[in-house]
Image 1 (cartoon, rainbow, N blue to C red):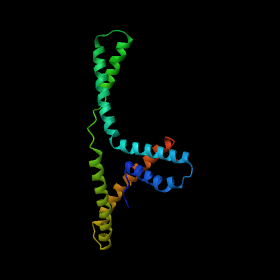
Image 2 (cartoon, one colour):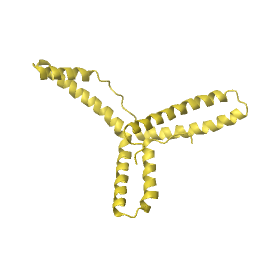
Image 3 (cartoon, rainbow, N blue to C red):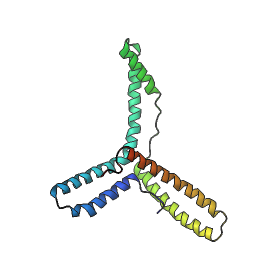
Image 4 (cartoon, rainbow, N blue to C red):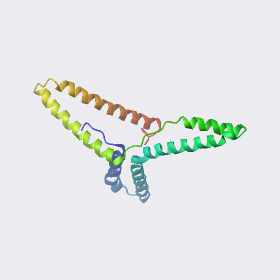
Length: 170
């Protein structure tokens, strides 16, 4: 398959593998309890992941607003603390407004559908290329360029996990 699963889907697959392949093989009660705790933590992250960016965008707006209002309230105050609050309020006023993010379920369903269509289109394009359709090579290049973007993003994600100490630790 040419498409990559979402982070939530990766977590789901890890949980399924732990439940199916690892848990039945464990002989120690302590090990089974540990794996069950890990499964619960993975489920919690899986459920939180789709909305975390929405929460962060909302919280950025709320923090900027309350800091801006605090700076404005300190406008009549004197001294270092009041000046510091005004400066904080000014910096918060410069924070960008983030757009509302779409609901995860809708975007995830659309992503899966378009990913399946992309994979199907590549197959048809290769068939048409074999039949000599002049446009096929350019269309294949365009789809491959998009797939390269996905690969690059996956690699950035992998390197980000490595920088945080999550890759290569056993």
